[in-house]
Image 1 (tube, rainbow, N blue to C red):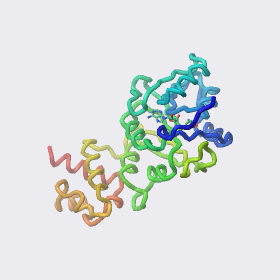
Image 2: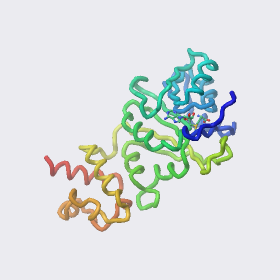
Image 3: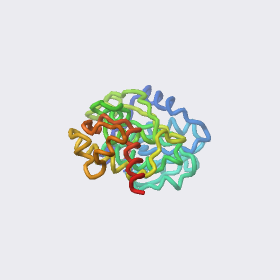
Image 4: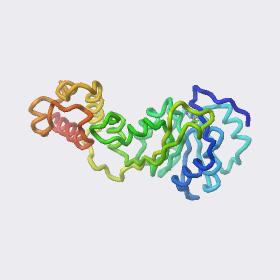
Length: 258
Ligand code: SAM
């Protein structure tokens, strides 16, 4: 179909067939999978996925694309959800879903945080994102890329940086490089927080001013006695702490509040 890419919807369509095939291979779809694609666009990934799946759910915001899809794809093969993915209720799809998508880069972090709330029903997720975002997702402590996104995602997900994708693989070409990432929710969390809201609060506070020491950023939350009890140096910065240490801080605070 003739379609002018809409910047407001982050539309950069994949056009490199060999890259598309390598992404599909990495996803490794099985006929019976309960899969949902976020932002199918003009079908670069949708069509090869449909060849291997009995059925596919897609969530797309652009009405022009929806109209075209309704005429193009056989209805029994695909359920089309005309929705903003940020408002979409993934709970309606079923118990064990797989999620894929070449995401709109302008809202990729909100999408990731939304899906974090649904990890109990997710088998795995494969996403194309801005390379810099994937680097932040998988970053280890004491790296410049390590931040709130890394800690909150690594708390729940095992992640694997799969491949870097150049701008020329898309039309229109984005200004940035992209990367494809696999995210698999832990069946049981390696470091469970007793109070997850408190854990999120500690992580947000610590990275709120990332150049400041923990003594400053966690003032009012954790005192000197707390730092000593946890054996954490209050002169460190948020970027130096592992996920396990953030959990230890929030579990300590939760136990003090009881
Ligand atoms: N999957 C296609 C491809 O690889 O060529 C298109 C990818 S394009 C980067 C992002 C897609 O997400 C577009 O189809 C866009 O219309 C859709 N999209 C943007 N914002 C959305 C939102 N809030 N909810 C659902 N879909 C959205």
